[in-house]
Image: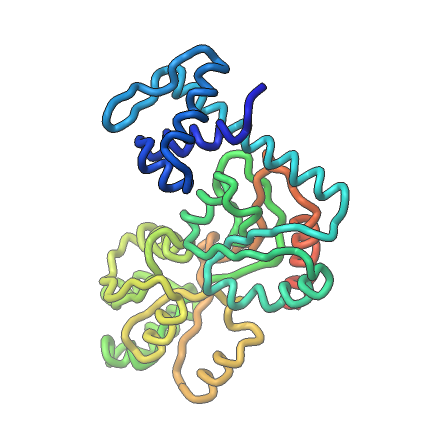
Length: 317
């Protein structure tokens, strides 16, 4: 009968390519680790490692590595499901989303969720769209919140609410760049948000890998322009703050302005912030939750999805 601990130790040895490093990582002796690997080799009557430096897997070892991960994943899924069925007094939920969107969305959901399910252990993984999609695919998060579609094999989604990306162009920027055409350009942006009017305008953009950045690049390509990008950052709030000061134009989700005291203060204290609706179809989308259909969905996850949908629809209304 296969011992799960033998498999776990074998995988660490395979990852480290060294008995010494693997034993140190596992906080056990090299002799103990070698014994666990020897037990596996005896179980299957086959050699799993080429005793070289660094340690390498035999063909049989590579096959076992693949199936060991599947076996341990199935074990974990089984324990989670059985614990869920037995008693919903404990649980764990890992949510993935961008730190900026989390700042706007999670306060509408998590306090109420925590109140109703106080024994659920909550974890938040923050990253850009590309990173979060990969973490969902590999089971490192239970679900992610982001703009649909969420890419990846075997990913199902639940729509939450509508979202729109706006073009932000402060008047002081236009006055500096196009002193004789400010009225004309503003009228053109109001009418159709024609980005060719801003072909020479500096832009401030979120780092590559974020969906807002991908949208910006696609719109620039469609308009056949390559405006100068004077700053890139991971924080969309920084981009907005610098744009308002006239450093460049940018793109910003409308949801982040809703019920936002900071925005009310900005609009009260700063005049001439142009917010323009974009005609591009991808500027109008759906915020949703993505989850892996091949992974067991705990009751904690199901309840979060239900509550998120209810609260965000109220929030947007």
